[in-house]
Amino acid sequence: MSMHDTGTQIESLEREQQRLRRQVRGLTVGLILLTLLLLVGEAVRWLGPRGLEPTAPGALRVRHLTLVDEAGRTRAELGFMSDGREPQLVLSHPDGRPWATLSVAPPPGAPPEQRQASLLLQDEAGKAGVSLGASSTRSGVVLHGTQGTLGLGLYVEPDSRGLVISDGEVPRIHLQHDQHEEASISRLRFLDEQRREQAALVGGSGGGSFKLYRPEGERAFQAP
View 1 (spheres, rainbow, N blue to C red):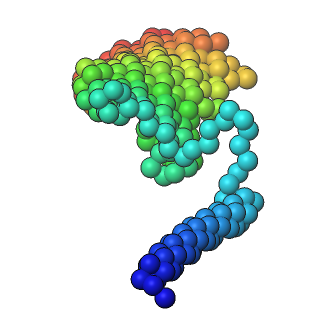
View 2: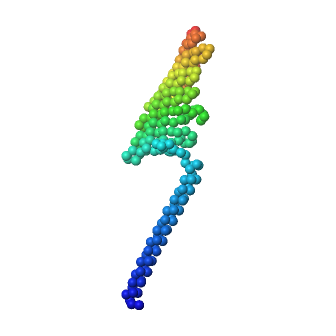
View 3: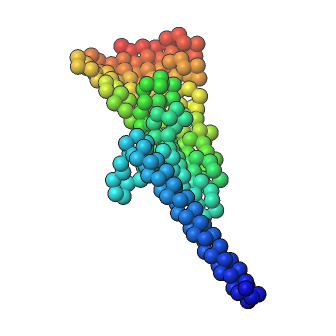
């Protein structure tokens, strides 16, 4: 056998070896892809009835949604409150402070089970400006002072409605009307900083009265 024939056989063997290597690589890639497809199919089959809820065309189902501006700052968030029970929408100022909040939450000082739909509007400093609430037992609007404290409140209840003017710490003027089946009565009360009544005007279907009190709380005048 000549050197030429030997070289030709070696080249032929090398080509055959390269062809076999390509086939092995192709089979390996195909096997990997097939395995991935099987895994994805099994995951979809397993999650389909359990973890993935059907979504109508054009619908988006999420638990938390964040909107950012061109600078990447968060400007709006739609999600759940800290207790995870009720949804909440928060619109934010460019510096990150909340500007408006729409949520379902208990009114201030109320037990957790007394929830109401509420809207809180805040100023540039993040202080409360206007708050609105609505429920089957009580609805109202509150205007806050420059420090975010209570300034004026208007409320409506099933048998009562009223207006409260506060100095930021305690209510000072309270106008209230109560409507009952047997009678209705209206009251206008003036209070001091210790919530003591200083003057009261009452009127209703049974007549009216007017009372004045001294600073220490003793009654000074009454008519009739």
